[in-house]
Length: 302
Image (cartoon, rainbow, N blue to C red; front, side, top):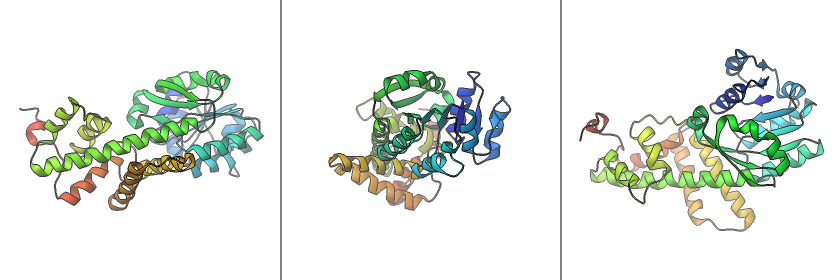
């Protein structure tokens, strides 16, 4: 079994697969990222090509479409390895890139499983991710057991390459929109003097409940941690991919377009490496407030 990309999420995915006892060949540009798996018996490789020379099935968890393309097609990429029969892409590349990759792999007789994930670092660590899978039924069933070690829900959303990507980027557009509008509502409330923790409790008991009110604001914003493990620039990338596919389909997304504009602005203001939950900080700056837990809330007092 091969695995390429041992970052914040990929390291947990590979560890979950390794826990099943499968022999593994792994690669990351950082030697220290491979070390925990080497200590569990994996073979550290010097390139993706070496991984694909050893493993008939290779998984990849990589940050951007260009990186995925380079890992496949580069001089020392997976396609130079020779032994790979199935490629499982856990990255978020977007529909068009997925289709291009599938066609490229088909020319080499390599099966392709489009399988982006949802749940972030926390879900990867807890092994409770959602998988948006797309592949012919036989390819999916032959590889489903490789997805199970790190997932809670696996949904085969379609047979065509890119369908998994479409489901994933639309999911992240929904997530980004929830963070955006929750930031706006919480900023207004903080400016008016409401207790943010109490307000979130009220939201989560009512129809305003969403992924941002349930976990992101309580865990990241009110605590001032801002360390969800998912960078703002990557969420912006996914929102852009969602809008690009809407254009392909000829569907207008006026609200989605506004969300992208706000995230693009937030990316400029927050700076390189900012966590995606730091969108809230941008709104705080505009309003001159801080959406933080009050001391009595931190102590659990009424």
